[in-house]
Picture (cartoon, protein in one colour):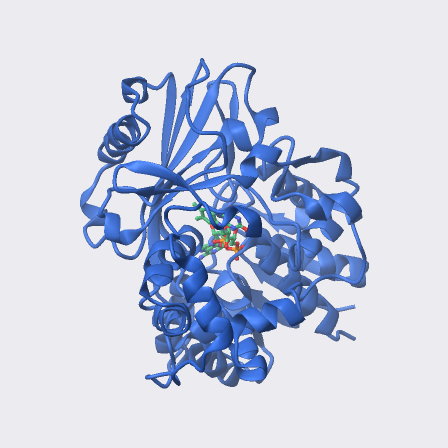
Length: 441
Ligand SMILES: Cc1cc2nc3c(=O)[nH]c(=O)nc-3n(C[C@H](O)[C@H](O)[C@H](O)COP(=O)(O)OP(=O)(O)OC[C@H]3O[C@@H](n4cnc5c(N)ncnc54)[C@H](O)[C@@H]3O)c2cc1C
């Protein structure tokens, strides 16, 4: 039986190793991780009695999220799952000094102030012939604006995609980020008609998880880190922490396959041209996540939290009301908030210190949520992710094609969130696809 090296022990590396071990129990798999812990972007800490997430905080269980559910079941961790509170279905937009509720379903759309007149845009999209794309590869902004108008693009799409990618919808590629919408346009002449004809549930596993799939979000009782710790335990001595990979050549000599789940900017330093330039062209957006925890319940609107559109010119991208989303992770009668700052639009991000980010978060929440108590949290933590999220900007699919071409000899397999999709569930799904497709003697 062969030997496989996996580079990086984020969720992509851990699950690739786990699925390979499931498929080939006798296989030697070595996972190399530069940090002293497994999980990569997934990191949960205990802060003032709250389990506080410094990276991803929840998994959408629908569609590709079923890969996360399948993994949890395979690991026997189903009793550790927590569903988000019903209240977390409510989400807000910060607009003109107020938090405005976003529609949570078709019947609440009419009363939504941020989307006043939305129905005209949607009806137009459904009924009218919409102009053809103006550029060869449209950005998400261009696509949404062309089909639904400027208001929907700026008020809804901008904060929504910023909330996921911390990026700029004027740079994100529609083909890479919302391919299903483009397919609907092609097939039905309307995105809305496409959604009605084939409600999007693409890329799911072939089994149902019942009520769990109806939750808006899921997490794990001890925090997302617990999943990574569990996968690390399963790997045992095959996981080599504190081990930085600084060259690939020795690994090619020792292993039958080398699978990289390293960020593109790290892998680029380990490979020759032209692969190096290809990988270097993947942009990453920075994020500072500021956790603010309180020993009492602070009055805020009921819900998951709020997003801020770029046209509001505020210092933060949004804020999550953690204790309302997953009350099990916080002590009774306490509150917990996560403030996101940065993104690819914040050009001067690297001029700020952790203290600056903390001040920005405290002051901004005091103003947005109209309560000076936000200025004096009982516990706080700032996590800076200098290269947090890879940007699927225009040209990204060509970059992925070129990477495929340059690695077609099969010596090196390139994975990780700049290839698989950025959600944790995308990474798990891609790991399974790699393990299923890899043939070893
Ligand atoms: C703040 C934040 C919030 C997020 N929120 C969500 C969310 O709510 N839901 C969701 O689904 N997704 C979310 N995401 C995205 C998701 O967390 C990531 O896309 C995913 O965790 C990436 O996993 P990965 O294994 O591909 O990469 P990484 O987690 O980056 O793992 C790569 C690993 O490689 C290691 N490494 C780097 N260089 C070397 C080297 N030379 N040698 C050895 N090892 C090395 C790193 O230390 C790291 O452990 C969020 C991300 C961030 C940053």
